[in-house]
Length: 640
Image 1 (tube, one colour):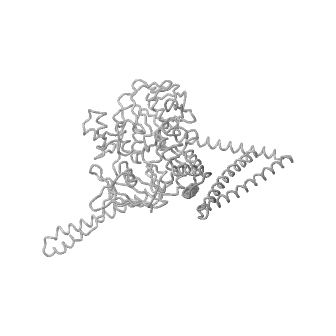
Image 2 (cartoon, one colour):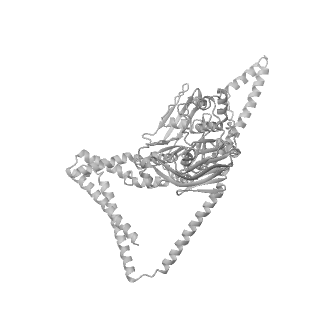
Image 3 (cartoon, rainbow, N blue to C red):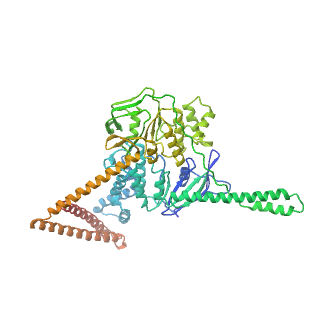
């Protein structure tokens, strides 16, 4: 057992969002936490992290138990990093204890020539063993592996965090957590802001995770690939099902049907007993029998009625003014991020046009400039070139980070400030359409969940009555039911839509064309997303086939040139012989390195300063020699 909790209750504004929740997490558990937006998933995660306290109910004492020194990593929604630091500095933070140990080892090594005290000698042995056992010499390799796998490049490592987009910052926060390798990794919507390729890499990486995983996600494919159990949070009650997401949907349907059947049978029995009591309690001849039925009713353990289907949101986007046929002209614009000397140009000389009624999906890797393009179209950031909207165009915008919301205003106040003519009843009715109800409307926008903030933004979007919608990752943080409602509303909207998304379902359903941002260029694709994917797949297969053909051709040419002179064969034999010699020498040195390292733990060595100093110096000589031999081996392989 890594972590367990029992009796977890939580109230907000008098409403109970968690009801006696109990959860046990074992090592190697892969748990998916699902439920509608605002049901309390993120609240439960904060309580498990002890960032928030549970409430005590009656005599029930909430308990959270963890194994000693449990290392927990938590990726929250909108996780932040220090914007003034470089990526490499942030990633090195994951190895702060190792780097501190290395720094202390270097300090002690500098003192060795002048002599170390017994305490310093013991400390050096301890630090060296700790550094070696935690793979301290490979921190750079581990950083590059994770950063490159998550779609970053070598040049990104020296860039400051503030110069990255919101999606990239989320990826960087996730990279840092993966490098820290905690025993329990808690992820809140980890696939938001990730492109298709990066999600696939993350799935593969987490499949080999040595610790436990607790994941909040609305990505069915992600949950299916990773999870071995699903915990559903519904109206405050946590229920756990074995298996992945697909198994959960089947087991849940069976459980609900079974509970409904048992509930109906019990209700019939209760009605029958109550009817008997009502007819016979006052009659002297049957009063004793009726009282017996009363006791039976009192002792009966009542079966709860299964939860009905939760009401879904109602979204509808309308407009009053129809714009001209040619809605937008973009000519020769550039996309840049950062300021001053750190200003970076992502794309130059972009041109395209949009006509009334078109629905264009904007796709590309994170950092390609998708969100920046939307900001340029809104004239939020300066740019070169022309952005001309037709007269009569009314823009309505959805931002992926809800930047325009006042985090200190309540949900009600946010709408009142924007639309002061609306009455409280009209505001509550509007919020009810997006399923923001009850006490949730009196919470500050900065404390509600990401899904609830998204729903508030959709309520605002409906009030804008725009004939052109600009949407930046509109399905992020939304539960599955709300995603389907949004898809339906956008499909029925007969205006113009430009939207950034990595949601394959949304792209396929809504987009009738694509703006593809890749390799510093923007290309227009006419057709559905599935057609684009098929063309991309065929292109990849053709490239692979061409590469195979080229390889086969080179092999054939090499075979023709297979005859070598006697001198060439002699040089090749000498090169192979030298390679074997170096490899044997490296094997011997590595064996000696292990022996010397083991000797540092021997009392006869670490208790004797001269022996300890000699062993440490020999270790340093071995490491330097191994580095030199490795360089020689690389040079020989390049000559082949």
